[in-house]
Length: 278
Image 1 (cartoon, rainbow, N blue to C red):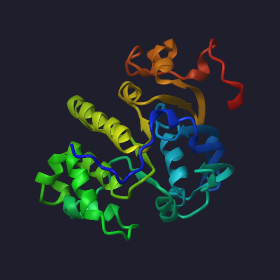
Image 2 (tube, one colour):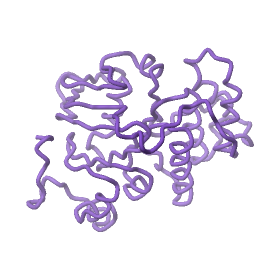
Image 3 (cartoon, rainbow, N blue to C red):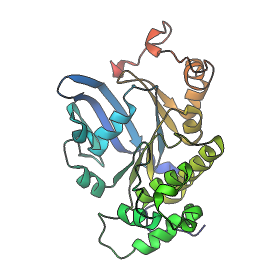
Image 4 (cartoon, one colour):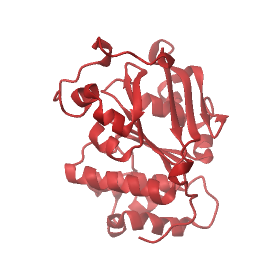
């Protein structure tokens, strides 16, 4: 794979400073439905951080709050603040957030089916005015050579290829940070492994910070350095990937020990929330 110098590389030792800081936010939909209840998290620069939890925990809402997409669903951040590079971004338009360096890969890929793969990639560069878009397309094809071979409409791509295209489109924006919402959804185990290998390579090679929402906790923790677990709109547990993998409750509820019958941390007498989340 060719070396790509244009995105600033952040070595692993530089990950101490938070690129993204979410501070005690609440999110309300339709003026009445409280979805996030004082959520806080940090994403260090140059890291991969996993946000885990069952359906309905508020993971996707968290990403939409960060990327400014809540307004499209009659939602808003009613309390707290979201800081990116030390500056507040809650309340500003999604396009301005993209220009600041955050790009979200939506759940379900959201590629434009009646455009080609190449046209989709060019769409990802819509905020740019430089002349290096062709070089960046070549860079994306280095990571996803299959896309170069697919010259037809994107709607005819397989699920795995569409996911690759969605990630490639995000790279075309030259982001400092990518928000990924369920990249493994609908993929075979083999493709899940391939996609997560590429996610790790993008983080390592390009220094792009990644906040990863996943129900496949095992896959997410295989690439993340840190993880947060959400229940009912709050973070109830966080730690390094190794700490979460070794946690007995996480093993039972998220790593296959309990099958599909996942329970809730709030029902565990032995579990105590950290004071900072109260």
